[in-house]
Amino acid sequence: MGWISDIGQLLLGWVRHRDAGADQRARRMRLQAMLEDERFQWRSLAQLVAASGTDPDTVRKDLVALGARPQENNPDMWGLIDRVGTGGDPVAR
Image 1: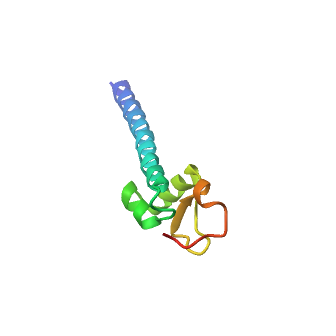
Image 2: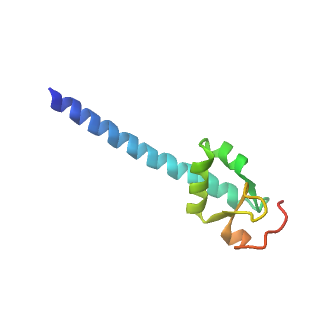
Image 3: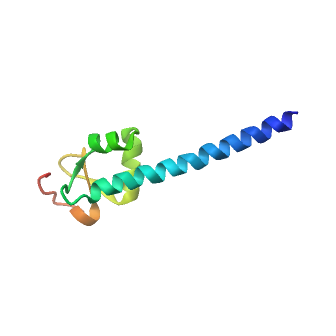
């Protein structure tokens, strides 16, 4: 009977892992959409955290994976490198 418990635990772990990947993809898509919004060149970390529903460290990792960077003068403001470049930050809009 112990093998039934082992199989159950294995399946539960697989489902949790699969769901975590889906959550990460959805979160990154939401962050990407916010960063691509033409009305804003920069977004505050607080806005991005609130929209993602996760903690600041996870959001920072997601932002780096998406190709975003913080402002040089204000590390709480983030923008896509494709839109803001790699340095010489303009004033946040």
